[in-house]
Image 1 (cartoon, rainbow, N blue to C red):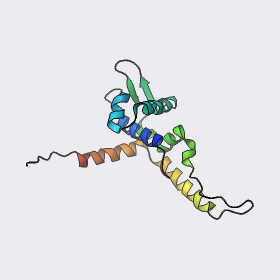
Image 2 (image 1 turned 135 degrees about the horizontal axis):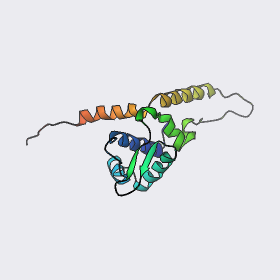
Image 3 (image 1 turned 180 degrees about the horizontal axis):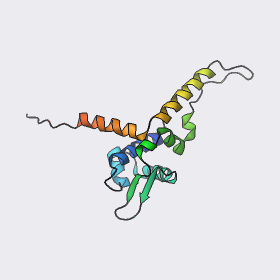
Image 4 (image 1 turned 120 degrees about the vertical axis):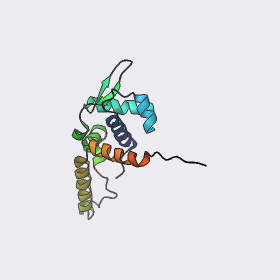
Length: 146
């Protein structure tokens, strides 16, 4: 199962908001630049997330977006459900002829259960922690001399 670009962009934007939490609203433009997300598309995604209460918008010259709830209270499954509920259900490659049992059905049910369990158990805070850990490895203070 590969999530759609919209879900991937939304998760990246939410991680960005969580990383900047506490420093005021984050503008859509700055988030789009940092994460490499098309601006108009990001605006649409954030609007859908706002309607669900996952993010909060603040208008005005110092406006932008913030998380509507704590990162630890946002399971990744909620983002999928907000944007594309059908994305949680893997597609079956082929169907059995009419009246015949599908021998692959148990596999697809097992896969679907595993994916849903993982998405429900993983929170935005988990991804933020991983992002911070990865940033430590990228943040170095080496001096190179040529």
